[in-house]
Amino acid sequence: MYKKITLFALFISIIGIILGFYRDYNSILFNVLDFFSYNIFTGQEIFWINGNYLRVIFSVTLFIGAIAFYKSKEKETRILRFAFSTLFVEICVFVPLRLYFISAHIKSFALKDYALSFVSLALMFFVAYFLYKSMEYLNKSKALDYETFVYTESTEIAYFKTNNWQRLFHFVFDTIIFGILGFQILYVLIRTELFNGFFETLQTQLNPQLIFTLFVVVFRTLFYFTFETLFQASPAKFLTESLVVNDEGLKVPAGTIFKRTLSRSIPFDSVSFLLKADWHDSFSFTEVYKEKKTGLQGSYYFLIIPLLAVFLYGMHLWEVKKEKDMYYEGAIKTFEGKNANITEGLKTIDTNTVLQLKNDDYSSRTKFLKVENVSNSTIEFSVLNLENESYQRFNVEKGYETSKDTLKKVKIKRADLQKMVLSDFKQSSDYNESDKINFEGIAAIPELKGKYIEYVLALHSPNLQISDSNFDANGVSLYLENKGIPAEVISVASNDKNINWNLNMLPKRFAEYGSVFLRGEGKDISGYKLRVTINDSLNKKFIYEISSTENPKSPKVRLIK
Image 1 (cartoon, rainbow, N blue to C red):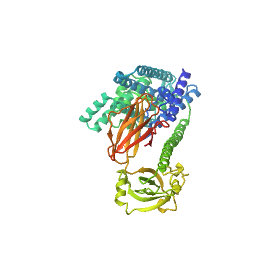
Image 2 (cartoon, rainbow, N blue to C red):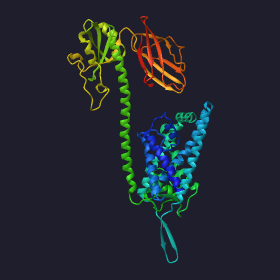
Image 3 (cartoon, rainbow, N blue to C red):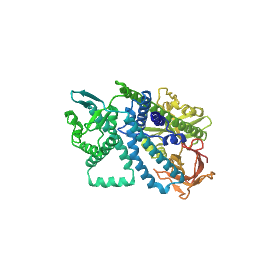
Image 4 (cartoon, one colour):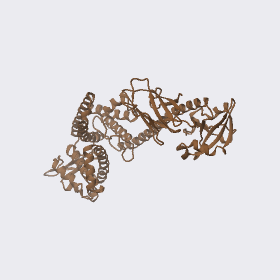
């Protein structure tokens, strides 16, 4: 049994550690590993600590416990008894919740869902059974520590009571574990239709402080009663190798444990041990005695704290790096797409073209260059400055019309226009690392020094952009925005027979601050290409191509005609 326990603990802990770093939620490997993942933390943020960090901490602690148990030839059991007992109780709570969720959604289940639900429940029952039998085995290997006094006519056995420091540790650590389990259970309960209605009714009849107190009393009673009835100890007592017994060192019945648990609700009971009163002990005629220490001696276990702290800090640094890499990966793709659009736009520049500029001075004003005259070698621009808030209302045309006679003019050589296009993402204002490359722009013209082209716009025309897009199991959703003159979508065409685009709402006008929603129905969509025709307020038609063949999550928009 000792090898089975070791292998089980290693299996669960290694899966937990892997999932802490590998989180490709859509991959088959992740879903297979997650199916066999068991942890006292559900992944919710607790006490402002990332839920994933907490799951990894538990997995690493369990891994250390498994190694210590194996190396000590099953003598060191503290971490395993703490982890196994807590995990067992949590599974026992979540099994009925899982059954409730299955029954609530069973009508929408496919055959695959039935099979997965059955296997998942069977696995949960098996894990709970194995944990319980493991706890029985581990507890049998422990005995109370005692001292024998031999007198002339009798022999007396005296058990060792836990000291005040251990009592304080029991109170603090059990409160933390109780709070974590209670929070996670409550978090799940309030998201069920049955209990959510109950909570809402309760809130109308009682004040929040009283509701919180009631939940604390109920959960704490269940917490201590369950642990001390099944295992004669709470999670913290396993770590200090302590046991709840009667004064003769024997196991106490469930009724006595219930009385002991209710006594904990007496005000100041938690600190009564400081006065050597121990009310929940004395009222229930129970004691907390020490077990014989059979595992690691000394303070080696305290090394777990700095080890976990270092591991947690390392994981935090890894998370920061991963988030930064993901951000820059997406930002570079956006940068490359934007540069391609700018290069394409500069090829067809005319007197209807406006260049929107950007720099790193965090100004509240945005600079625009409106084309006035185009020749083979030079282009003359008017320099327009607008408050950012004004530009957000798409008033470039209005701003130009009201001030065009007073705007400053600049001439730029056609060949120099490329100097206003970023050649490297490290020149972008979105890049903030130490190796950032300074962008000069056209330094010879003071108004343009350090400024680069962000967008090539066309006045008196629509400007189609995608504000959001996402895939799901049944299709793709697109949200189109128009940042030009008023227009409407009049048609959508696609040669992909696997996607059925919903065209019933066409023609659809763009609201000033809204978007046009397009929905394409289809299974297992990996990419798409469609043409959207727009008719503007001047009755001109524009055809755009929207495609996501290169990167499904980042569709591109290209003006065709």
